[in-house]
Length: 372
Ligand SMILES: C[S@@+](CC[C@H](N)C(=O)[O-])C[C@H]1O[C@@H](n2cnc3c(N)ncnc32)[C@H](O)[C@@H]1O
Image (cartoon, rainbow, N blue to C red; front, side, top):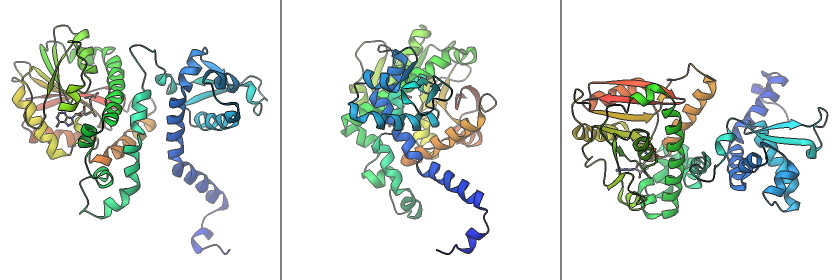
């Protein structure tokens, strides 16, 4: 077949490099699904439980894999090692083809997927939420949604004919998936937060705090434990509050944050604002402002979310940039999104707040204190 004029302008080397890159981009979903599969098979825990390194045969035995699937497991592990989820070591330098001699280990990413079996499941349930088919399937309709502004507000609604929160109120399994995933995320955030004195300072002097859209109350409970002077409560939708554990550690209140937020010194909004459009965030913040005392009396809103472009100085900033960009587009599925500092500032001012302070101590996320 004759080449088109366009191809003639590209060197063979660039054509082949471009082809390889397109394969990587187009098959990005294969990486997601391989990660989901590894979590469901229990591979991170198997490697951890085997002392941090296991061969293919050892892995297969630990996860009780049917022997006929062993060659497929090798292919799964190859994707997960080239993408950096697991490490791979050859027992002998020239033994790259002998699977028995290959030892798979954990990386900084997969170490976070190991459960301690008691208080923490790592981030595996969060990753399962991120790749839940209810959230990934609507992406197939993204271009149609872009080109037709008569469509519902989000491509999630276009696909499912209802919004995420209505669907979760009706579908107990989805509600549990969201609750479990966000509980993992909150435990992770609290762990990092409590290690940093600037982050701990945010809660000093606070006597009462309401965690709005606080889900299962994981973060409120951790704050109540770390700062016993803070009386913590959680406000969430009725179907979430109804499932709340009755252990009495924090008070759960069923309600709608767009209508009313109970009074407290501080209102916490973790991973909530990025679910909503700017005008909706302004409404939520106005309700927050009604709930808290003046700045002089210690009133504040504490937001935990991304400030796009913030916190990039440490670590591999290109990975953080990519993570922020991916997260932002992911949230567009239900018309949410991440914000840059100026976008946050406009929302705060529109809601009648006087100032804010960004504390970039959570990697790709930050803590933002907002003052009335
Ligand atoms: C992404 S989750 C975040 C949960 C929790 N803050 C965390 O980070 O673990 C968003 C939460 O907002 C709650 N939510 C959604 N709409 C709400 C509303 N109108 N009023 C109160 N909570 C709401 C959801 O039920 C869910 O628990």
